[in-house]
Each structure stands twice: as C-alpha cells, then as structure tokens.
Image: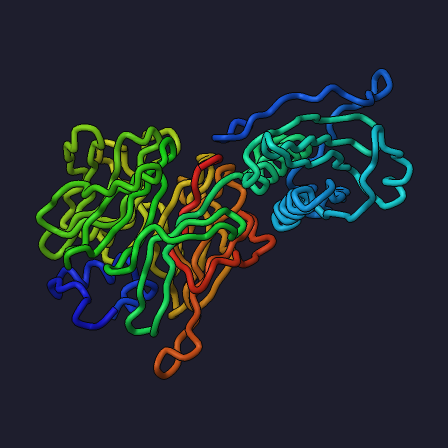
Length: 457
C-alpha cells in the first residue's frame, strides 16, 4: 500500500478512529458439522455394576493437574493426522496431557495404560477408500475400564482435520462436563509489508492456525472482523473507496454488502446474539454514537446521543444489554446500557483508561483492554464491574475475543517498533480466563484483530 492509497478522511474523523483503535491499528496504517456423518458404535466393554461412568473432573482440577490421556496413532496417514490434531487440540488447551501409546485392538488391557499414569484412552481406526474417510473412535475411562463414547465418522477424504476437531470436542465434553471449542475458526487481519504502510487482508483460519487463507485482496485497509453467532457471515470495517464503513461478508457466497450508508464513518461492528442486527459506532461532529442496523430491512436506530465518543459496543449473550466504551465522563471507560439505549451505568473504575469490551458467551465476564502508564493490559471483570483481574500485559494487548465455551480468550499482541519499524511484530495469542496457559497461535505471517467463530463456525 502506497501513502497515496491511504484513505483521505478528515482530521476529526481520524482522531475519533485513533481513539477507538488506539496504538494498534492506525499506526500500522500511516457431531453435526457440514459434510460429516456420525453413527454410534456399540460398547465393547462395560464397567461392573455400580462403577462410575465418565470421569468427573472439573476444569479447575484439570488446570492444576492436566488429565493424562493416551492418544495412539489410529493407523495410516489419515490416522496419523487425526491423532496429531486431537493431541494438539487437547494439549494446547492446557487441560490434558497427551501420552503416546500402542493402539489397542478390541478391549484394551487397562493395566498397561494404568502403568503409564493414564486416566483416559483413545482407540479406533482411520481408513480411506472410494467412499471417503471413515474414522471409528472410542473413548475409555482407564480407571473403571468403561467405554465412555463410541462413534464412527464418515466424510470426504479431505476432512480428517475437521473430524479430529470434532473428536477432541467430544473428549473435552465427556471428561470435563462442558462443550469443547476446537471445531471452530478465527477470523483475523493478516498484515504484511513495511511497518508504516502495511497491507491488511481479511483472513480466516482454524482455531489452531491451520487452513489459513485470505478473504480479501489487500487493496484497502481492513479492520475488526466479527462473526455472526448464527450464520456464515462476517461484519468488518473497510476503507474501500477511501471511506471507512462497515460491510457484511457472506462466507458461503462471497457476497459483500455495505451495512448502513451513514453520512459519517461507521466502525466497530458487532452482531446481536440472534444474528438479525448489527450494532456499530458512527462518527458525528467531534464524537460518535452507537447505532443498530437491522440486517433484513436495513433500518437504523440511534442508541446513544451523549455528545461524547461512544464506541466498541457488544451485546450481552441474552441480547438485553450492551457494554460499550465512552469518554462521556472525561476519560474512556466502560458502560452498560439496555439494548434499546438509555440507562447507561459506568462499570470500570481502575487506574487508566478502558476499551475494547467484549461479553463472554457465558454472560459472567466482560473482557477489556486497559491502558495505564503507557502499557496495555488485558483483563476481565464481572458485568457489574466487580472482580477485575488482569490476565496479561504488554506493549499492546488488545481486541480480545472469547472462544465458544467462554473458557479461553484470543487477542492481539504487538511489540514496539524501532527505527524504520525494526523489531515490530503482531501476533494472535490465547489465554485462559484465569490467566493460565498463554500461548501463540501460529497464523501465517503477522496477524491482528482476532474474532472467534461459534462452534462449527
């Protein structure tokens, strides 16, 4: 991108966008899954009468002592890939400790696996043929000798990774008692080129960083993708034709549409929980207001008119409330109001300024970015502002997004740039909501602005 290609916007609008995006963006600008069938497999062994079923292990217990689970190679190239992806999913979440072991035939010799310290065991086969790929999977409780799950999956020959993610989700749910999040994707902004004039492309990948590919060509600056919770759509901001506005992209058809042709700049989009509405910020004079736009009728509704900069809106999971960022009190802080607007109440009172709020799908937490003393922090608090906890810190840590079960956050981490942009990096990391097990997702090249899809998204 050449300097002459950068959008020509007014100083006031540029200031408003800088307030919203902060250091991160404008400085850089200058089993029911589709195609997979599942069938139950009969149990090969049952526990003795009165023996317990699936292991009762809480997530907190697994954080302290990850669950040892044997995941052998399920045979052949396809089986090796399936086993590798399952091990990666479970090991990378920090709640399981995968163990290599021999593949059992029939009912396992549980004494062998107990000697390895295993609590659970995977067995099965993966075969490819004219009918595509078939993966037979069984999950065993090593301590009781009971088969916990048995399912056969069939799909196209290229769906081995998807089946593996589905199996990892089943293991997570059966052993921890809540749904997994591995069969999901992350939309993000792929960045390339010199620090001062980066090319940004809308991109998407599996949650583990695999299958990454571009959704836009990079002609225009693109930022803040957001998944619909109920359909295969992304809302995002693009500077197309030198005018920053919100668009919606249908991932199935590739069709892209402008959402709300406002007089001012529109930015910071977010879908409602039912997927029928998108809320966003729209510039107005020296400030910005929050609007909602109905996707079917394109009807607009103004939700705030404080005279301040109101931005970064996000619905609660039940759609009844909106958390947003506003400087109406003098500095950017977090507020909650009703979904229809009105009744705004401040909830952030810590040291520094707050932004980028996002509500957990569980409804129990709001994640945020806090800036104080020139440093960024990523944290969570309860919806009433209590229990604030900082999870991680850095030069820039921003744009948090929850995984579908609310247990993990993905976020952007950027480093400081030296002369000519030397030393700058931008990557996507993940961290547990307790501040446990921070790691990087291996996206191709530099990346920012992650947005986690719903399960099977």
